[in-house]
Image 1 (tube, rainbow, N blue to C red):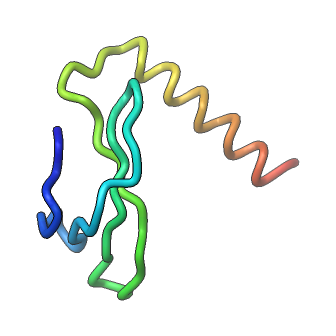
Image 2 (image 1 turned 30 degrees about the horizontal axis):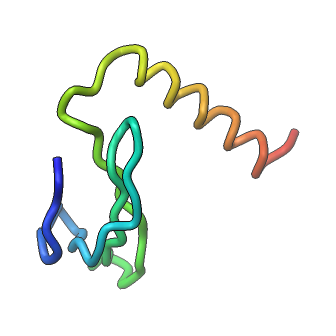
Length: 69
């Protein structure tokens, strides 16, 4: 799912692509609700369960790195 600059997704407007990988693409976007620049991730069209499990594990690890117990 490739997004074009200027595409609107809810309160976000896509500004530019940031990167792409095996699970999807990440874009720089403007959030109109709080007027802040944020990143938006979009999954690839052929996303599958194995990639979802890996993504969830990655998120758990990321949270532990930034919020140690």
